[in-house]
Length: 136
Image (cartoon, rainbow, N blue to C red; front, side, top):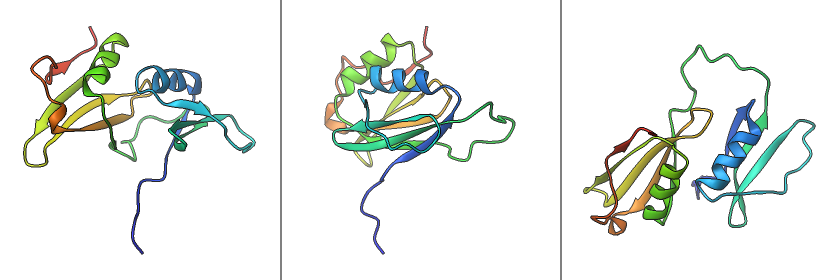
């Protein structure tokens, strides 16, 4: 067996509409076609691929540690991403990793899921703040 790529991420939430809005407005995903599974939810697409599956779930126990610490997506458009995060008042921290020539931008969706957005190092610019932004 050889893994070819990340197929999708499945997140349970009681805040489907809020998550759909955030992933569309901030990360540019598109809400698209989804089979009828007998419960609410949404599939968010990147291009033709449904990469984020949101499943409606009632009030969840949040006392334990998260099952997934974070997930990462390879992206392009670093400047526009930073701008969208700031416009939505989403906190983030960003840094450049010279050993891998990747800029990592870490943020959280409205449900608190930790997301890493990875950009090619050549997208760095003196005009882009790679520090931290607390949403203010």
